Structure formats: C-alpha cells, structure tokens
Length: 278
Ligand SMILES: NC(=O)C1=CN([C@@H]2O[C@H](COP(=O)(O)OP(=O)(O)OC[C@H]3O[C@@H](n4cnc5c(N)ncnc54)[C@H](O)[C@@H]3O)[C@@H](O)[C@H]2O)C=CC1
Ligand SMILES: O=C(O)[C@@H]1CCC=N1
Image (cartoon, rainbow, N blue to C red; front, side):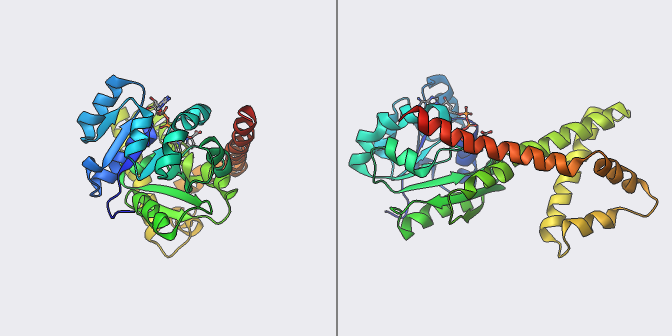
C-alpha cells in the first residue's frame, strides 16, 4: 500500500463526519478522501465543509479506495456490501467496518469472501481528536495494513487492538456508546442547576468545564478515580451528601444494568443481522 492511501467512506453520517473532521484536523489530505451516500444535497454539504470528493455511487467510491470504511447503519450493511462486492473482489482494498454488532465473518461473507478486514468500534469524540476506538483484524490483514488503520484512528484519538473479536461487544457498551452516558449526565446536571436558579447557559458552561476538568485530572493523576472522588469529599461537607445520594439511589447497579443492556443489544444485533441474510 502507498504511504498515502486513498480512503473511501461509504456513508456520510455522524460517525463518518466525526472521523473525517478529525483526520483533516490531524493533517490527512482532503484530496485523498472519497465519500459516498445517497443524498446528494447532504454530500454537497460534506464537500463544502471538508473539501473531500463525493459521489452518490458506492461502487465508484469503492473503486477509488485503498482503504474502504463502511460507515452505514448495520441494518443496511448487507445490501451495501453485496452491491460493492464485485468491485472490491477485483480491487481488494483494506476493508474497515465501524458498524456495531456485525462480525468480521458476516461482513466478509457479504463482500464475497477472502478480503482483509478490520472491525473498529470508534466514538463521536473523534471529531475533536479525542476518540477512543477498539480494533480487531481478521487473518487476511497484513502488519502494514494494521498500521494504516491504526494511524487513522490514532490521528483522531486513541486506538487499541483487541485479540478477541467478542470483546468488541464490551467495547461498544463502554466507549462506543459511552459519550451518550456522559452527555446524559451533563443534561441532568444542567437541568438540576437551572431549577436552582442558575441561567441555563451558565449551568451548561460550568457543567461542561467540570466534566472536562475531571476527565483531564483522571487521565493525568497517579491516583485512581475513587481517591480523586474522596479528595473532593470534605468530611461533613457538601459533596458527601451528593455522593451518598447517588450511592443510596443505586447508581452503581444502574450503570452496570445499562452497560449490560448495551452489550447484550450488540450481541443480539450480530445474531439477528447474520441470520436475516443467510
Ligand atoms: N454514532 C455513533 O456514535 C457510532 C456509530 N457507529 C456505527 O457507525 C455506523 C454509522 O452510524 P451513524 O454515523 O451514527 O449513522 P448515520 O445515520 O448518521 O449515518 C449513516 C449514513 O449512511 C448513509 N446511507 C444510507 N443508505 C446508504 C447507502 N445505501 N449507501 C451509502 N450510504 C448510505 C446515510 O445517508 C448517512 O449518511 C453504524 O453502523 C453504527 O453502528 C459506531 C460507533 C459510534
Ligand atoms: O448506538 C449504536 O448502536 C451505535 C454504536 C455505538 C454508538 N452508537
């Protein structure tokens, strides 16, 4: 593979935009990126925003790519794959899927078989260079190709390889879905502070800065999160009251239940989608 491969994206939604935006910020060339999707008006917006090349023809996009990133919803992936299969069987790009649930074998089967394929579970903070991605490669992927995918996802955050594909379900429930959990916390904190009389904009600004500050501290500190939490809790003070309320209200089991629900949905999707196209 050349040192600057052409990267194709099939699908131009939230996740593709986040990855493209992050890649361009970190120095990837817009001229080396192709994007395809059915909605021409949306594609023109993407082109104006990022300067990438666009097409409504998935096969044409596939033909241009050394690395082809499948960024459509899992439910339409089978149709998209069988449509481009004749092209990719001929050009043999490195296939990358970011879809939740769908296994490497299922995808490879839909693509005609025998292709190098990496599954990635990224997340939307990729847009601001703060993504977290779990990666799994099938046996057809070379070390060079692994490095290429790793460099794309490292350029927009942190990329970590997994040996066992099954672990992607657990990663999906952690970092794939995870940004939404923290956004929910922001929503709830903003709402509570607004009820207490703080203007919404001020409440949001303080809540976001607090979340970002806590994350940065946790990343840099030699202490674990439990100790950092204790450092905020003055005995007999205010934080203790809030933390006790969270604990008494069952926040930990609730988080575990939510996490397991996401992981279980990822497993179910894998089964349902593989079965539906046998
Ligand atoms: N949104 C997220 O936080 C994350 C999403 N993912 C995965 O990323 C994938 C995409 O998700 P989102 O970007 O959130 O979805 P989205 O709905 O925002 O984007 C889907 C895109 O696919 C396009 N599309 C629809 N039919 C098409 C076709 N036949 N050919 C080509 N493009 C077509 C749509 O126009 C749209 O641009 C999913 O498989 C999801 O599991 C993975 C990690 C995180
Ligand atoms: O909710 C979903 O299915 C996708 C996968 C992880 C984040 N969004």
